[in-house]
Amino acid sequence: MPSIDYQLAEYSDLFMLLAAFTYTVAFLAFTWDLAKSSKTLRAIDQRAGAVQAAVPAEKATVSVGAPSGPEGSSRQWDATSSALTADDAMGYTGERRNAARVAVALTVLGALIHGAAVVMRGLAAHRVPWGNMYEFCTTGAMVVAVVFLLVLLRRDLRFLGTFVVGLVLIMMMAATIGFPTPVGHLIPALQSYWLIIHVSVAVIASALFTLTFAMSVLQLLQADREAKVRAGGRERLAFLKIVPSAQSLETFSYRINAVAFVLWTFTLMAGSVWAEQAWGRYWGWDTKEVWTFVIWVVYAGYLHARATRGWTGTRAAWLSIVGYLCVVFNFTIVNVYFSGLHSYSGV
Image (cartoon, rainbow, N blue to C red; front, side, top):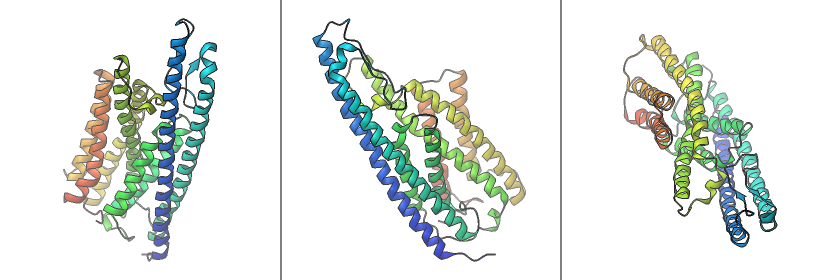
């Protein structure tokens, strides 16, 4: 068995800290983007309101909608109102473009450094770097960041940056503070090619569930805002104006959850095959196996209820959130406090 390269492992830890610092700056940049957008949009609304009060109603047409383009704004002004709001509109798009671009660039840099740290961890141990909770959590955080960046190539989801990068930081802090594990060799039960297949797919599925969790939380906030607007109430979270409608968030979250559910189904099946090879049975009602199945049932119920029972809106969002909380419970509480054949997390 190859010896552990402890010096390379130290470099991995150093790069992990550097990645966390870069993500922190990216998180602040995304947060600044939302805060600046909220302030500017509030000013635009105030000036648009002043225009509507100053000109006849049939001429003061101001259309406000959810983001539809890459710059995140679908606001429109007619010739009457543009004289007062054009400068604000240009400032809004320019500020958002600059702040968001800096945040995305920092996230890309953080993901590259993070990826280097994960690779060095694997090279130091001469195996795939997801043999314990520390490695699973750090690798999972990297996959969350990478998946978010890949989705950005197709859809403008920069409004999710604060929430997604924040979750990445939480995962990295949990790995470093809650599950610190020195680099080492795998126990015999994990020395199988099924580790690569089973765990890698589970990591990708968990990363997609993390994205939909963030979108579901935003959906609830947006739905509450839309209800207040319809009732003529006062809006508190102005940044939600640059976020798509609750319906759009729900639709996109549903599609991602459908893909993640297929991956989680494969994770469950691959785990059963691996269990037969390692312990001579496909299913043994081990605590980890039970909670993996519970997660599958929750998301299956979510997809079925939304597709056939009309469970849309906040009910669908809450089901998605409950599913993700089950994923977190399975990874943390089950691994740490429940004994079983899967109790080899290294903590």
